[in-house]
Image 1 (cartoon, rainbow, N blue to C red):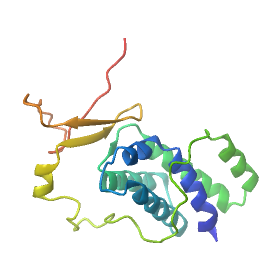
Image 2 (cartoon, one colour; image 1 turned 120 degrees about the vertical axis):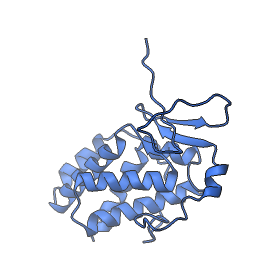
Image 3 (cartoon, rainbow, N blue to C red; image 1 turned 135 degrees about the vertical axis):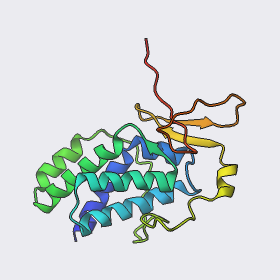
Image 4 (cartoon, helix red, strand yellow; image 1 turned 90 degrees about the horizontal axis):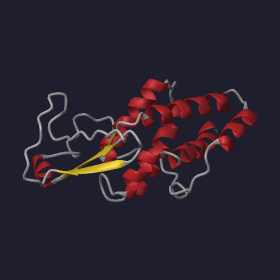
Length: 187
């Protein structure tokens, strides 16, 4: 079955995805981030093998999952890179080019397998794809939520606090409730 061959590849790519790892390590989103990441891996693998996948659609799916499940927005282009890798590896797998696939996987940077052996449930992440589901946010949550995670261009997660007494500058391009953190140029 294609899923059984592709799922370990998704796990490997997710283990190398710094933004996902940092979101889990820093407790972004709901408690149980590692389990959520495991479910996300199952969901993405099933989505890829059960659909005709294009990079842009998969990129959007990954961005939505990071936002909905981990309350994290990636400004480092990593969802697009992850989507490109997954589509490429899936294509090699479907074409039966196993030696070439193995070579590409072995050429990937070695990483710590922080995402433990995944669970094999077909349960997708909690609320993806249901715009009418308002379990992800409420007015009460907005009052209690004092930090906003943002993945910067270097792949690091920055958490900004809204508890300071200084007024924040207005930025018309930013959605209400979000703080944009930009990297500074080093001299």
